[in-house]
Length: 196
Image (cartoon, rainbow, N blue to C red; front, side, top):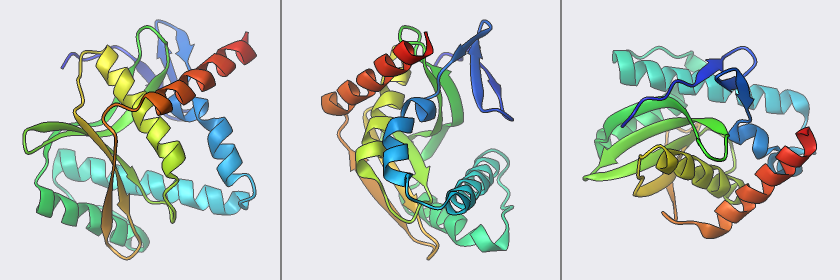
């Protein structure tokens, strides 16, 4: 798997390639997520985003440094991930992998690329209370196409839903999802039109 030279600014969550800012998958999905979360109190959304960041960071440290470091109030989510690892035994290939689509010029961060029983999986963790499958299937397809354009051919993809009860649920999506890709293409087209 070839490394890319994409730069990322953590504070502003911006991706740059040769000085050119690339929209993120999250940014491009905003019309869908705004529709889904538009009536939710902003403080609730902020707390959920913080929780997701904390859990992602803990999983990254666990996978890279083999340490468990997470605030007690979020430990159940980490425990769910740990249980999944113990039961599934994934071979971790890339964690928090930042990459981009060289033709369509968008970027994103893939939570996990791993091998499970000799198949290459794209895994995205979610700590939300509900799983918005219509949005997540578009997100996963955007990541898969981005990886494929970089020569990484994902065979299967899933949302790994981690809960505050310390449990996990695997939600698999089609390996080839033409409908989700059409939706993402429309979102990218609208974004490109709006920023010109």
